[in-house]
Length: 537
Image 1 (cartoon, rainbow, N blue to C red):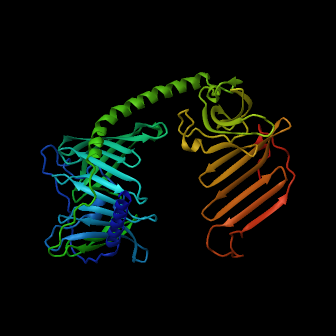
Image 2: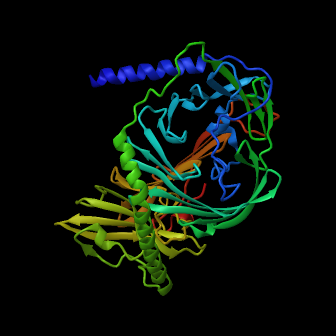
């Protein structure tokens, strides 16, 4: 029964996608309007009743309200809107979005094509016409995301939470407080909370304190004080200008040429960032109105509503605890009471060897040639500074015997140094932990991953010495892929260079031809403690 239900759902989605992506007709020229319901005038402020007051955007090429807005003029009701990214020659390019509307012109379903398949987003409205819920099924057909909103009396989304119900993971939670300080002055306070998956907790990510005031006819000045809690070096204060368009705000730098049809619906929008074209299909006379086809899990809504209130206090407590921990690490570093090497020689677990303020990135285990018991190799990030100002890493090798671990070797030269980009003395960020260690074939292997390449080193134990026996590296650009390697055991050096473009080789071009060669070289032995002495090509 479960498999049958999945097949029916898959068939429904596929059929719906085919109908939406294929069946659209073209519009013609005219005037403009918006389908959005307007909030009733409020005596507090003439600015506070603007819709989407918080959603100030630079590029509204993907904004649902912009893409789906239709005129309320009498005539046939638009059933669907197909949005195309126009190619440089002015022809319809790729289909960006397809949006199904109800009879009132409100979006019910958005279909967005992707290489892996379309994603589907259903929209739901409360009795005041507020879009309080989005349910998106990702193009992978696995992830289902709920986005729930609670509104204030001005019909602004005061609380918004996104949650992946498949993975049971929080996407984000935002709280927005809107206050009218005067008739033409509004204050917005926003706090966004994100999940820290490394430590499985929620933390405040950023806060924005914004003052919105009139700067001219249909023009607003927005002064923003932004605080980034994870890295205060990104804190900033800036002022932007926004235009009022159809009761919404658009950044003043976003200049857009718009073409309308005779019903007042825009059919083309063109700016420096995008060129969009819309095509419409219409409800036939007597045709039933399209309604949401995906049922809402009410228990999820109840859970998310509770999370809106319970998560912020927990996030602030986590943040406070992190600040106390950071100050303790900073004092340890300033006082020099952190570990400058592994001093323990024997212990009951590898964790006992960890010096103060060090971070264990990767651990591998296996048999190393020359040892008759299981060995462990551990790569550490350390607070120790290199001569160039980077942080040193340490490779430690342990032997396990009779239930105890014994330190065999520690080297500060075997691993590439790193930079504490977050300046938090945790040494656990993504770009700080881009390596792994393992024990394979009786030797110690080290692998590095970079944005545009990889590298590896192999160390062996030989006659009481730890030596480098092999290294390789590769680097890619948009145009070329280059790789080098050297095997110290055979003295074999290999080099290759390949062009990544489809262009054929031209002897008059500066682009080198594809090259691969191998040769014998006699390089000196490189010891583990100082591999960079002879590590170059």
